[in-house]
Image (cartoon, rainbow, N blue to C red; front, side, top):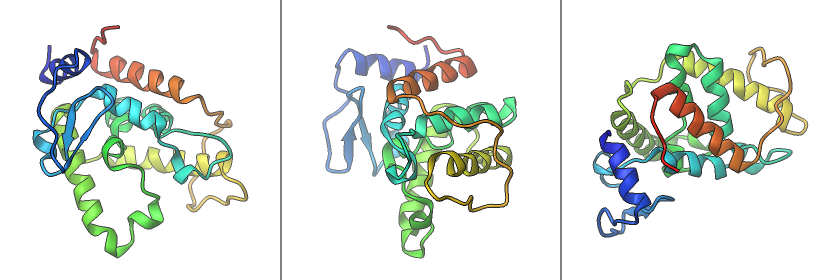
Length: 196
């Protein structure tokens, strides 16, 4: 059992990992994530899957609910297999830092947010033994999904980029289904067992 399996098991048993601080949030599994020390915070894949399944893409301005978890699941199938885990996890920091719309995130005064989100993502990469640099192939797959989502899920949308969208229409699943798909894909890619 890895360190993060043990942490998640402790959380499922309602064993407090440590007392809350002003810079920490309590996650879905009951553990604390400290924004001042993300590298020292336990990170649980179930927290990531659950949180991302409840976060809506495009700040909620979709025709219907479409989760970040489903988006990430789809990205993991569009990028090459050797980068599929990075594809699945590419937005994992949003489980803690939320999904800030791209135009807002890239404004000059948002640099502190972007720096902190990168720090959280580095902590996640360390926890799950992933390289800290997002592969170009994952960024490309993310962009393909973005234009496909713009086409299928936004009203009056002309995709922002000159990228060919995927064939077929995205029909979003429920948040519960997205969480399950995300965890199943993680298990498939890492061979991790999840107790019931």
